[in-house]
Amino acid sequence: MKISYFAYYENFGIIKSMSDSENRQKIIIRTSIIGIAANILLAAFKAMVGLMSNSIAIALDALNNFSDVLSSLITIIGTKLASKEPDRKHPLGHGRIEYISAVVIAGIILYAGIAALIGSVKKILDPVTPDYSVSSIIIISSAILVKIALGRYVGKTGEKVKSDSLIASGKDAISDAILSLSTLAAAIFFILTHISIEAYLGVIIALVIIKTGYEILRDTLSEILGERIDPETAKNIRSCICEFPEVYGVYDLVVHNYGPDTLVGSAHIEIPDTMTADEIDRLMRRITEKVYSSYGIAMTGLSIYSMNTKDEEAVAIRKELTEMALSEKYVLQLHGFYLNKTDHTIRFDLVLDFDAPDKQQVCEKIREASSARFPGYTIYVTPDYDIADL
Image (cartoon, rainbow, N blue to C red; front, top):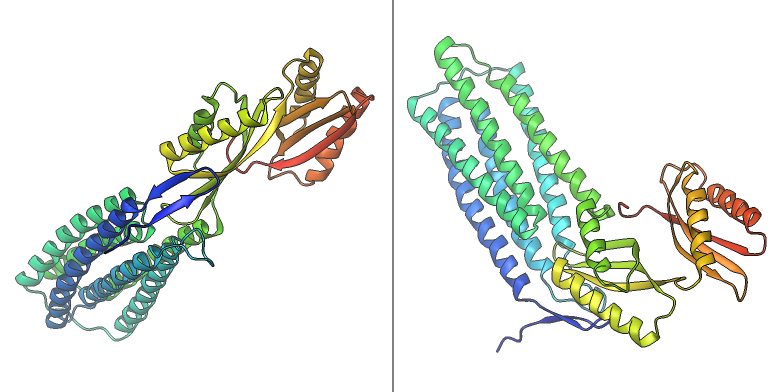
């Protein structure tokens, strides 16, 4: 009997059924198998036509289809490995393997492009006259339609299930369709004029293939390095948390990507200084449940900023210091403000622009100005960063 797996986020008591992940895996594998079947047929027909007509462009097109087959196989293998259950060494799962598989696919595309470029240059130096037939024109035309349909299907499926590998394969298929269209144009041009532009077209095709591989590699490596959360998503998460009446503000939102369907987040929330530990605990649990159910993000870390709510002087000082800080060029936001009259301290965080040449110097300037304005208090300023759009 197969035991269904559940990922348990102990910090906030949410149990995530893995049925969605299993369904996602089946969709990716099914889509990849369809891509493999289509590309094998296209590659076989194109290779046959390329050999019969001495067409370097069609032969390169066939080679590109064979590389697509390999890409789909890697997508299947990557998806299988990424779906492995978490273990002691990888407690958040193996989802990032999908990004690694996308890097491998980009490498295959780059290799195919470089090989095509070398072959095309050789044909320019040692040209061969092609011999097109009506059947070859029909096959190329059919291949274009198949590739457009396949590219749209694979790409849309990839976006739906958040699979970088499928999205990359979809883009590659659309590029193939465009390249096949150029091959068809070259064939028609040769039939009409008896002038062969095959080899030169092959160079263009190769450069486009290389460009596609580079873009996929660049975008995937950027995701592996860790990208800023989408501004609209960040805005929605903040709004979601601020719907709780006890929350006055949400700051320092960070979302870590451990795979397309494994997102772990943290944030600071500003709440009244009158709340008890029990009230805070219940609030945090409600927030994590709501964010997870709404956006699929496991908020494993919610930190607290205590807010002065009954001291009018503290409210006035906060407003004045905020205006002072925001007048500084590189300061984007002041938050986490709290005035403690017992130990005569004021503390707050400054969100600084990444372009600030000396972040510590900016904080020190604000601290000195604050101390001069309110000499009876010790001022603590913590530099913060614009991790998610404010």
